[in-house]
Image (cartoon, rainbow, N blue to C red; front, side, top):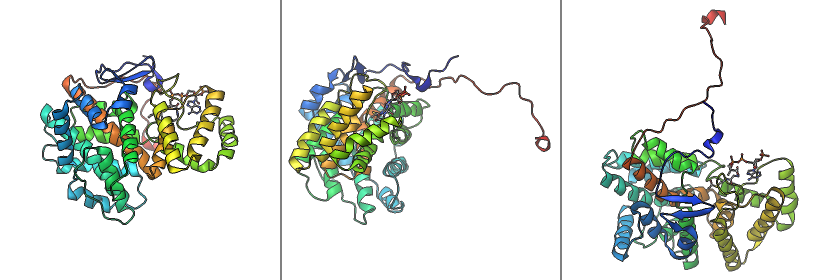
Length: 370
Ligand code: ACO
């Protein structure tokens, strides 16, 4: 038995949800470029769960369900009030999502209808949890969700406490479309491994949030912004990045396990970053990002991934830096839950092997003789 480090190149399951073939990302056969230009996040979530784009009445029903489930049990909100004020936002989300199961009577109902309903509930409640956490830690009262056609609109409304402007809603909606699913990425794999034991959907999504938190995965968008803030001004970007590369440090937001010729999502986020920079009158983050891309791609041949321009996009929307990865989770909940449903449809325990590299032929030595 020979191990493949990081499972690189290993095909661990079949899936009909999303594909990455020759650098093209599709959801259910639709090119991400097509969806990014035309679809709303709710249409995409429907597509991932049901395998087809919704017609008007199907979409209206999904929006109705999302609105119906968006409120979070008061016990979970009360629990968030007890979190230390400096709690990591992804740790807070992971804990709160795990707690949702305690207040859902159908948490352990494994029927397909119940699991689909819980997927929609999770999609509806995760934005509410994040917005509540963000307000509570600032000493503000959480804002109840309103009736809305859009997850993006409702999230921004609950976060800022007033109706968000159209540009912000459209930008966040597009970001949600772009992050919704991505084949067998680390967090989706974590979700599938968990539910393949026939554990419940809340456990699967809690595992996925834990995996997304890391800076090599979803946590990279926050790390990118930390880097941009650290650099501060356009003039300092070149020396900063050159020094990091000379020290063999990674530049967050670059490189990808699967895409070697560029992440197809990055160009959409780059365009949004530029547009939002113009609208807000602050091109600093965008200009700096372009400069960094020029250097990293020029020297290392590495292209930006989905996280690189997300950082300046969310900053232009005045979203606090440590909510970037939770927002990624809002979007990816659609993909995680679609994969969980697919795993249940044709389940087999996921249990690989390890190549043993430890000692052998050891004999027990009584404790006093060691
Ligand atoms: N900056 C500098 N060098 C890099 C970077 C980077 N961002 N990414 C890869 N490299 C280099 C590595 O140092 C390594 O060089 P070496 O062979 O000289 O040691 C080589 O490229 C291969 O890198 P690995 O880390 O082995 O590649 P892997 O496929 O395991 O990693 C990953 C992919 C984790 C995304 C990596 O590119 C990385 O750490 N990027 C920065 C973090 C990031 O942006 N993560 C978000 C990914 S997208 C997402 O999850 C949503």
